[in-house]
Length: 466
Image (cartoon, rainbow, N blue to C red):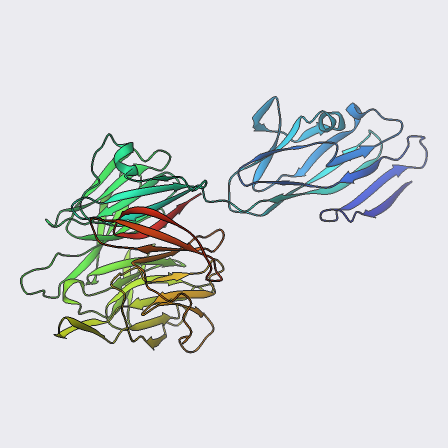
């Protein structure tokens, strides 16, 4: 006859243990005396020792107490130190005592993992769950994109706050990046820098993410502005430089094959497409009007078919976008400039428009007192529940609010604004001119200034790399 005993352990996260033993043997019942779990940093390897997982059996040697993994961890694997590249499904208490078993995290942005196991002394069987707590994935490098004057640049800041200006040139034998880099994005393998030239022959410079060395150039673009990734592809918004009449011209988004770095298609959108952002299976494109400042739409592209499925009307001159925790898209619309009282410039129909991505309904809020000259004027908090935007200062708006805030969050404006996705700090770019060094100021989510860095001329954005 078998009997079953259920044990609850109130350790890191309690495991449910089931013990079966036979009435007609003298083998002592094993005791799972320790099941503490482990804590490690993201992408790290950590040993599981007898201090974290231990079975005591008075009449069985440790080498004969055998663990079997019944459900493997999802975000890493178990290995023996003799070969930490190969997963193992069986090990002994002796292995644990000798610190031979390790958990290898795969670097994914996850905070927990676990594996289920059985352990036996040959007669009796215990089952349990071993819990793994993973530190939040940390930012390793901060890249500040500087528009500059005749040649732009990239500033690299590491996690020790060490600054390397002209990082692209130093990694590529003093090769200049080119005129007016506008935006930058990074995926697992490559960094993409969108460069808009005065001659109307823009391009995307592709470098390897690990060392920033040139890999490819995506050319054949007239006035590229931004890049986004979706469905295994890259998308580049492309416009036209100013003509003599500053006339309105509809433009396109190019589709890029990330394996060949070649253009594979183009999608007609509105005039002067700028920022693009993905929500669900749709790519939202802000059509600013370009040099005509005469558009007020967002093109919605299905990333499976690469077709525009909807055009949404918002406030004038949409330039920047973020997605909130509900998947809704917030659009920063800079307004159409009115030069009739130049040098006093005012902006007509400026505002923030929120697109409900389920219904395509638009809720708009008027902006007044615009003093910022940048186009990267909106960001989203780490939890995606607070929208930061600029007009005559930096403001913070909860996504559930029904009116714009009146209290200033930070009482000044900047040339660009981004949020560190790990700790929620705001990275705010200050331009003091195209030919003089700029600054990046780091503020906490509570609006406390933490530190600042001296970077290249006309910094407009910060890109974060894990």
